[in-house]
Image (cartoon, helix red, strand yellow):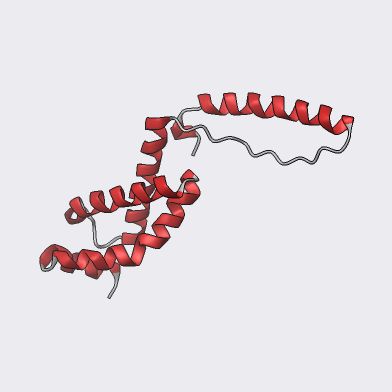
Length: 130
């Protein structure tokens, strides 16, 4: 049964079928949210909240459209709300091997650049930093 047909059935007959939606999407959405946020625990909370919001709004879902796009958009929006609320700073990863004085000097220069970049990036509004 397609997701859209399942949603129609949930809205008409059997609310218990919503667990089927959760089972179909939970792992995929968790991976998606984890990739966006970088924290599996927070991603799990976001996905749980997204399932609740989707359930509450299920009757407003247009079954002529793809359910997967709708539920992914909810997770995406919840993640962006999290970033907005907590202004999470996403650090730039640094990977260097230090073997000589030149490398140490280079490391210090790169570290300063990374710090400046992170400072600038943290000032960008969340809507532009997606």
